[in-house]
Length: 436
Image 1 (cartoon, rainbow, N blue to C red):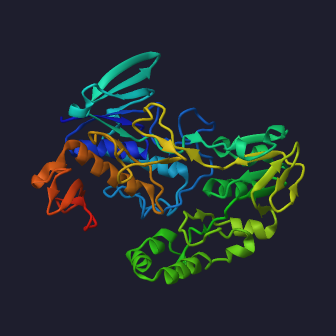
Image 2: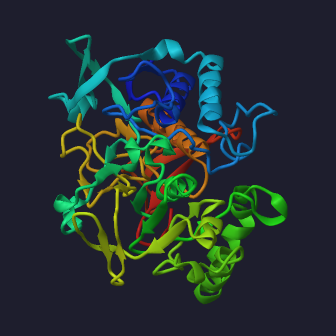
Image 3: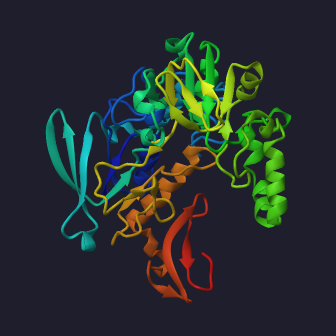
């Protein structure tokens, strides 16, 4: 075995990282604080500290044809869009097929990751773990952080005047599990993302009234696209990318908005984004327009203030007799086991080279896998990230006589990526007169 690599988390990104390290002859050890794999997709009937949490009814927004590992397709009898239990079944099958479980240390918390004194030379890390009350410190040659970005809830209570006086229940969407608790209640959902829309439409079948409050609106897409095909098979194509990159901006924007409004005109439903041309990540919900038409879900602007039993919106309307507020306001990027000098989140954004490597490190021996918000599926994206990071850690950036930081034909070579099946490395290069 080669270099010793610590992998933090045994979700999709962690499993992809273990497999990639093994392919490159590295020695991976994965630390998982729970007693199971799957990360976000492992459902629990209660939110657990330090790990992602989903509600019971979550389905995938990407189709199985577009979201599998490249060498491990889904079974034929799996539906196009899967319930979380089906995806978890696939994840377990992948881990067993690739013999990954033996590299995972379960119920092990990573409490700190620090540079060794000779880091500028060796690139090594001191990692402290805790298990059964016992601490252990081990030296690793590299670290792949795969802890996800749906762990630490963002609760912007200071942005809502009067919330401390509200007498009803306030929770974050990570604590929502199923709709039975809110039968006959009047519920306000703050946030128009995927979780907010899913929760609101589900509650609309049992609650007395549901209102969604949104600051900026959002495009709402159906999973079913042209001619009944899954949306991502028709929308994420080379042709669509060609149009976006080559058409004049005005025409490209017009075409994009036309596609988004093909199913229904968002302006008529109060959903129109403030800037519809920004390509903001859309919401996927097949039921929301119908629930709005039926009157069981209403769309309102941002909350101006809360009162003891009501919420006042910026348009002056009031939601009286309010029982519960569910904040579907996303998550903060946080890495409590890392010093701020290594990864620092500013305004909930983290600066990473190619979305993977902290650029200020003297040695590229720490990679963050899965901290991306792609339009398409997460599995193939994180799989490619893990493959590339493993090759960088191994040191394949020195193949063919090319070295990072060296100048060749006026360009500074940075990092390579291997294209599967080609057996070659491509190198990102940058200089004032060339685009890498």
